[in-house]
Length: 382
Image 1 (tube, rainbow, N blue to C red):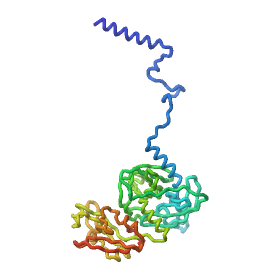
Image 2 (image 1 turned 45 degrees about the horizontal axis):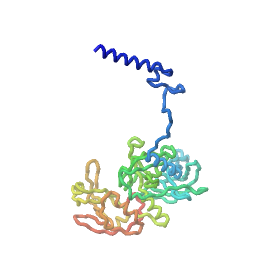
Image 3 (image 1 turned 60 degrees about the horizontal axis):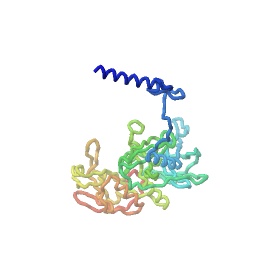
Image 4 (image 1 turned 45 degrees about the vertical axis):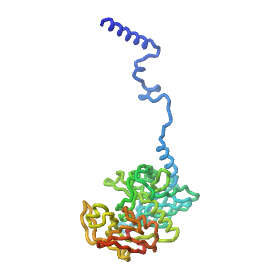
């Protein structure tokens, strides 16, 4: 035993002598040292470039292109105070250029009631804008500036092909912080919210967790190819800031507005408010299990009223929500079964004022087919 201990001690002493006999030896060489220039931190001996992932590179590429066509919109409304003095009130929002000649898409509520609209470009050039078209039910607006040179613009994608889970990017001017990028995914499709101009009902909205805040309204929601698939419109916020629940108007609704404006047509409207019911809920209301859109209200003077569509006669409490019952259940539109809450909005996006639409409704235990001649309603109904 004593021999083993003596041998181990001899080996340890030999190792210590070997290390300490080196000319550049110090205790710090064993535990690391401050930077050669005296700093209290150290870094790698060789500096390498940032290793960006393909997803990061995609974000950067889309932002560089998208920021050039995203603008800052200031709208001014003149009001009177208690002493009848006129004073300006400014509202801020975003928009995006859709052609080189200066056409810009934004939200209706960004420019509604404005006496003056000013557009600030990414290079801080400012232009006075004119409002060409307002689409209040879809909370959309088209404005125009007269640039001194051709402008970069964004291409409009196809929102009908969106899938929950795909990546989206939002560019805008939240709280006046110009050209801010946020990223997220499509969280859900076909959402119905209370928002937009005058807090009306907006149907068929895209839900996203990409941060959207005050000032983002009217800015583009982009897919991973840089195409616009939505117009950022509203957020759900108990606190006043983003909580990861934002909403965008599908770009196909804006494309329909643009087509009608170009052709001199008015947007089609049916003139109803509805709620989607199916499955157990439909059966509980004595309706067919396959469900459909239960009409809650029919607008006075609307195309739906003229066709004899019936709204709710009374309300019941389901969970924490009141639902009107006794009205027509729209089960199919132009022969296509209704299987989502934004079915009317999607069907109307393909039509114009004066077109016909065939509705299959369930009423008093029977299925009926009703042909409606669509109007151009001005109320906040689809």
